[in-house]
Length: 47
Image (cartoon, rainbow, N blue to C red; front, side, top):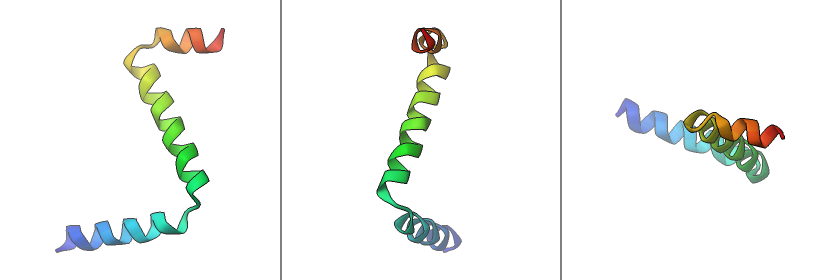
């Protein structure tokens, strides 16, 4: 039950955040994971 309550709290908090902010964070996370998966991609990204 604690888990479900926590999920509900997180969903409520996420609903208060603007979609643009969510997409920006998601994109940053995607790029981070992309570079961690293959570090040379980061070098090409900087060039």
